[in-house]
Image (cartoon, rainbow, N blue to C red; front, side, top):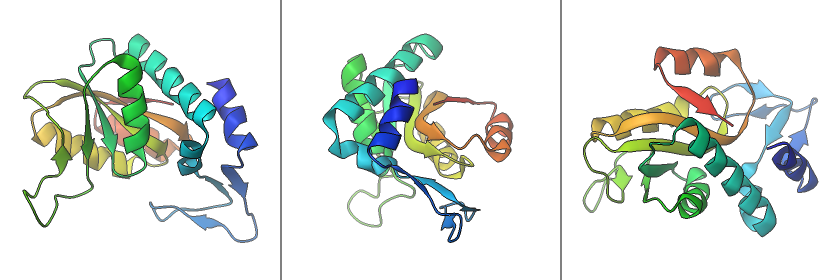
Length: 169
């Protein structure tokens, strides 16, 4: 995954702005921002990301039965990782749709299936842990969470400890 860090720098996904900090989804203001959505435009980069995360899943969560992407940034990476692992894929919205069948989870998820969630970035874990809740509410056995990048905040560790759940980037 060291190459992925180099890739993120080379495609200018990492931006520094100490004078005008970025506001993250969590509300935290930071002088650094990693825009992993850029990776979808670089086939070689996204292949390395998919292979790297697939390798982590093979090692840490070998009993995985389903890969779940978080909407929206986790969806393409979850698809490529699921392809690499030859596993089914689902995705989880932040909230149920207000039309159609009103689903929060798209794809086929059977009661008790072992799931690893994929998000592009982990800061405090707030967004992805909502997806964990949604998957568990549908009967999934969530094994862990994987992402491309983490800011390694203590808040992330605290939130995952509260869920008794592991993560890897």
